Image (tube, rainbow over all chains, first blue to last red):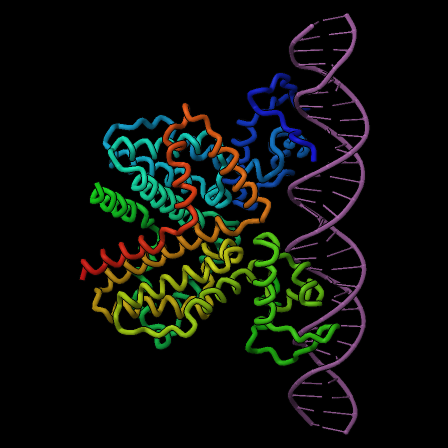
Length: 231
Length: 231
DNA sequence: CGCGTAAGGTCAATCGCGTTGGCATAAGGA
DNA sequence: TCCTTATGCCAACGCGATTGACCTTACGCG
């Protein structure tokens, strides 16, 4: 029931170095966590391992985050921030939305292990707020009514996150599970009795080719078409 | 390096009752797991708890599944099976695809805690194979070329699973995290400084209403339109 | 019908996980 | 320079999955 044992990042004064001389910060912790996720998979981010990677005691992390969950939210916000870094609206709403969508989708897919943890979470942190505000502003400035803006915004952001999660999900996962899925594909789908599954059998080679690409760009363009017709 | 310590369900002969008299089976275990997921959230499925609920030692589960991961795959396949139980193709490809999509999406959303664990996994088990074969057959029978069939199938299944995962994801999650997300919404979004986030501020009430619904039906219809134009 | 075998349930132990409370120390304002 | 307290460290707790050894009883063969 202690209110908040964590000092917010901007109020931090004393930067006491760790035993091995490293000075911690929220930024450093999040970046290290992203590295761990990339190296060890989405289940590979543990307090102990993170402490090890930072040369700090695991419990030290609780001076920066209330728990692993809050750290995960911070990671998610960092992804959004990375996605939109340097982006500026051009005034062409269609181009702007397309750019934002592809950037966010791309950022998640670029960090699939992290995406697996964060795609369905609402962080309420700075970068996420900025992204929401930006998308809403693009639509309103383009002349959409408030209800249309909200409807399109909802579809846009959900579609982006949904595909990001799906595409990231199949890339992420502990390498064992990934290998398991691949094995399933090869050993099960490829060797199915042709008699029982004729459609899978005939489609199998084409499917193997198709499945590596994301359907998101197509779906995004369809959404933009629909929105344009609305104007 | 032991090949397979698990006896496949159909080869099971001896049904030895547990200490308290219950006879285990793959089916019973999966159903109990689904109940646990519903009651305790997606993080609430643990070997210990499952053993407790079954009145069996946790290690007994390893006689039926190689590990928790394989159990999760079985749960996913059960969801697909439940989704398509009793479904028969009508011959109208559009109706058939719509029905399959809505059924699968609905089944996942109906078990959000389970969906969170399984949406991005390939199980290769009976029900999943049957669903794939069915969708491919609908498209081929409708007259689509093999490449078109594969392309549409890919978009259809990915979109369905992506939205299912997203919609389920926001419903599932440990109740603590869910409450956290809700709190974020109320305490952060609702109280944002109007000056810094004018668009969010004006949209906030409408967003709160919109966000509870899924955008999947709309997206599905758009996909079907696009496919129809292809024929 | 009874007996040997091994399937399948149980027990106990291992290891890693997040998290916490107490403690030590040094950063930095006064 | 001194005092406060932020912040790092340590040890311990409870719970997680998983495993290997053991035991017991259901089954199938003669």
